[in-house]
Amino acid sequence: MSEWKARRFWKEVRITDEAPGFGVALDARPLMTPAKARLVLPTRAFAQEVAREWEAVKEQIDPRDMPFTRSANAAIDKVAGQRAEVAGIIADYGGTDLLCYRAAAPAALRARQDAAWDPLLDWAAEAFGARLKVTTGVMHIAQPEVALAPLRAAVRGFTPFQLTALHDLVALSGSLVIGLAAVRAHQPPETLWQVSRIDETWQEQHWGEDEEAQHQAALKRAAFLHAARVWQLSAGS
Image (cartoon, rainbow, N blue to C red; front, side):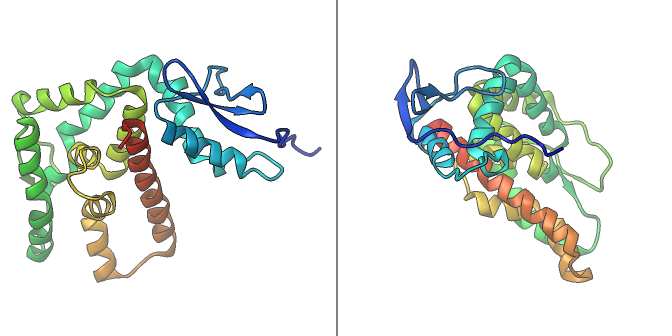
């Protein structure tokens, strides 16, 4: 028995004015989320990206081809209803931030980490008043509350759409500081992604590339860059 798949039924995709925000309509039908909530986007630019995805459908609807629609659904159906919990999950990365854990050896890898990661930690100290401690090795180091508190406060101030983007930026990079640097446009998203992969890049350069690992890395890079774009669209930048 073949699996049923939704097919294109509409002729026109258009953007509608909502209160507040913007929606997308397929003919006369407004787009709804999987949980049957009205799909309302925070900016017209975001609505345009969603509309393009639905206009591009030829016959069958495939959510895998609709990353902006999926992100909007997640923000409305998942994050909006548990905003405080999601903010807490994101903020907790500050206590185990990738940038705080440096290699004991080789010296060249440690130098590469220091050169790329120290300026980001300096930026976090200046931008948020959050001076995180650095250690050698992978044993957990407790971060001072005086550093974590302003990071938590910053994350709590974001909207559900912004939290959706920030969550992926932080989870994919393993660094709250990198995620915040991306949303504050401190460095380009591509640069920050490469900064998050210093250890992996080192291993590839010295031990060779693994095809499956390269494939997974490419998927994660695309997701990281997509999350950065979702933030830009959500913030109207």
